Image (tube, rainbow, N blue to C red; front, side, top):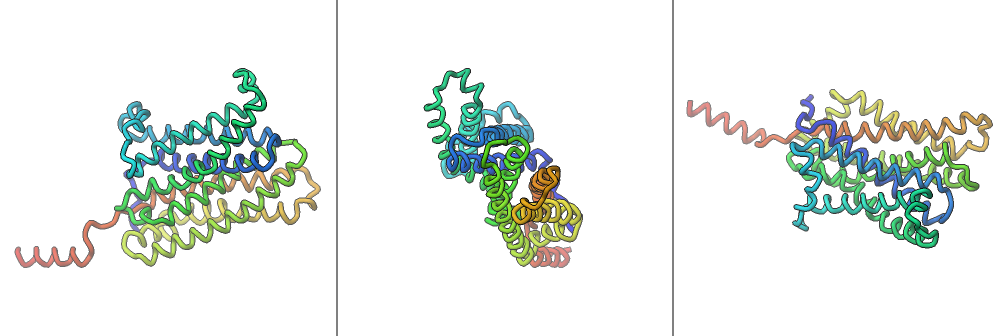
Length: 323
């Protein structure tokens, strides 16, 4: 049922995942920083470094796909067309990386001490960076979907539901990454309430992602043609096992169940190992699902036919008459 897309390699899929993860993680820690200033240092520090490192690695993966990667490192300098999504995206990614990196440096005590940044100035700068970083994070998350939608010849990608799906997935994976630090590293008083807030966010995001995914699949299936072929590859063709197994079951169902268990029965779990294993397992599965989603969407991107079936039939008929 259709051949898999073979034009783009694995690097763009890795960028789409890491870019979304970066955006979601920075958004989560920015909200936490603004809501509880001066608290949860290990969680916030871990989150901003994950955001910075993920975006850097994602950009390197994307650049490595082009023929001249070293020239591509300075490609943003050539993007001066303000109406081009490529230009907007290049400047957006550059600005976001600067914000993320500065926040990571100023969040780290040893770095701030080495730079001799006063505590008051450091707190003010981190607050400003968090405020700026929130819209930057949302824009980066959405842009990972817009990047694919700039290929109109692939109906699976040419829909506004794809940026919506990738944005929700980015927030989900970002919260999952930050949750790992909240569970494994944080010891500040009150982290239990933060973990509960994260679990509630996971429940809402997974439900929303399932709704957007359903709308995405149904709308493209009803569109017919290459769009329906791509959906068929995902749900019943060559990619059905990773779609239903890794993405839907592991990436959505398991994190949802883990979050519900934490919210409903966390206080009843006496085993300390289970207290850690349930949220960590749910977060790890969310990350696996987010990565799987990007690879599946990339692989299932079937190109539309250059001519409609009716036009092809007319051309064949004309050729038969001429011959």
